[in-house]
Image (cartoon, rainbow, N blue to C red; front, side, top):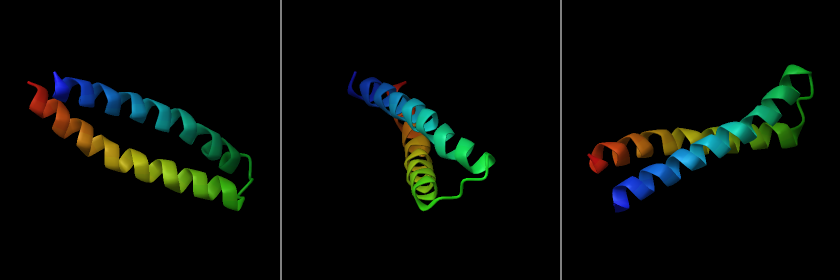
Length: 63
């Protein structure tokens, strides 16, 4: 049960991270390369890069 809960919480975190990531990506596409968009993009991309392998590992433990 704890591994499944952690796996689902990480999946929720990844979903939110990718939903947030679309806003600075859209700003970059329209040409706004502001420092706040760059910082948001980098922060959320790093969070996603950390959560993806962690979620895979937790999913493997839950079986």
